[in-house]
Image (cartoon, rainbow, N blue to C red; front, side, top):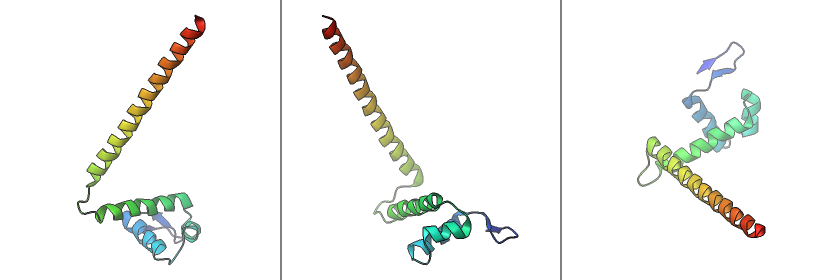
Length: 105
């Protein structure tokens, strides 16, 4: 960990982030206390906690996914959702065109 002259953490390594997240999980500190103490935004710290929870959940699986597989699955899910949204949009446009044609007749 790199610390400046005034005692503030200059660089938040994964090890330092983990230590802070563990303190929060153990109830030794809170997100708001850590935010004030280390001059970090609460949302940044909450993001670390969420990342830790996802990592913990994955490591406890019977067959943990490696990081690449996790990203591939997430990408596939997002692509499927995007494809469904595009199909719905096209269907709505076709329906609107048909309705406009009927109004013209």
